Length: 564
Image 1 (tube, rainbow, N blue to C red):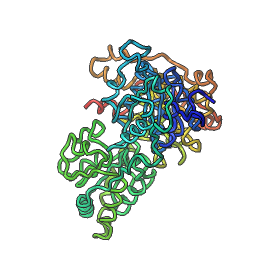
Image 2 (cartoon, rainbow, N blue to C red):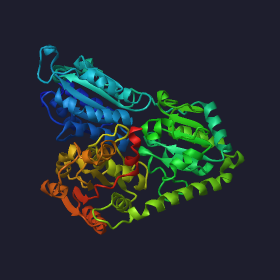
Image 3 (tube, rainbow, N blue to C red):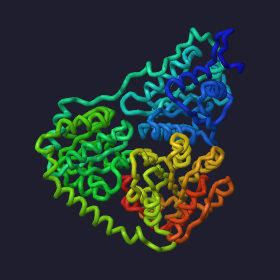
Image 4 (spheres, helix red, strand yellow):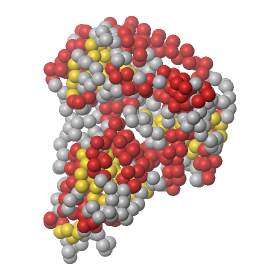
């Protein structure tokens, strides 16, 4: 038998095998990793427990993939990295999950306890570094505690709003073997409680009353609608009470395009004119102008999993802490039957917003249909939107190009939109593709990259080839970090607009071909659709290299809203 495994004679089990048993109890099906001598006993345990070990080319990719896996499946993701630079390489992925409220566990190696403070290979104070960006960070002190502390870390992932945890396991703790009888191995489903709270009943009644009597209500469905799998409850509320709905983050796709309550382009108009505004699962951060973009005369209600988020940066009239799905369901039930839920009197309000949507669409229609070359980014993202099916998971990884896509691309199903989240991390695209295709092989994955963003983690395109995970990738290539370039031009003048933000003219189509994928170059906008279809039909990981106009900027970039 392998050296670390348990057997009937000695009834001993190693730390690495205890890790694997705890992962199995949590329902983890795959770990993302880059190998290192500190952590290989975990691999041995995973083989015995039937957990996939997916090896990547950079630890940042492993952490982002664990984050992405959690978003797609609703189950926590797991990344395993070695000590020192292995763990520091993963910091960005953990930080991104922290801001995006994504439950994942990062396990990092560490030198042996017996070498503590002696300068062992790759020794760093990992726990100190990880504490500010996790919900829980600790060192496992003893082999018998390994599985117990893994389950503890997972439990903390779900305290309030979800988030990441970190464990470091010293090498002697991981490799040592202890009697099974001395090791606490929590049983599946028996070491953490449900965190689904339906909110304060009095607050539910108050919100129902507000919505029944509102003349111009609006609701923003944020990421926590998907996190709590509250899609059906959200749809039922907006349809029953006839409320216009806007969506952001992972909440996109809650309502399909074309739904009479699906609104996208009139959000600012709505939030400036509504009398009741309900914000669900979205903090008042930079994306919301810190709450300043909401009408000062509106009654503002905030629903969130985290008490600390409610009322932060802006006063509110009502705050409800709990599970978005359960709360929205309760509000609908409380409002139903009262004055027809207020639904009948809102037709004029919805028509007013639809007119604002049409005006905004007509303003950008020339760019959406532009035949110019270099290609206008609006034309590119319009073609991508037309290309998506109900089974297409859309991933955005970039700055200016993804800002364009956020105004145009509309996922057709819930849980089919992935972006970095509020940390604004570039480089999530390839890792998210990896996680999405492994978790949901039945889904098509379509990813749009900025050329700068792709460069950060693009070498793991080879990992997708190696694991035979086909996807349709598009690089909006302007050879620039354009979101920053615009700001520099405005602040310092055109003679200094290209300092530190200009890239080479890289043929990413040839890069894909070199690594065994499908690649194609596009310079004519008429060729975008056919190229996307050929990539789909290739059955390979693909990159369509689309040369876009470097002098076309998204409105959000020109307004520099992310910095205000």
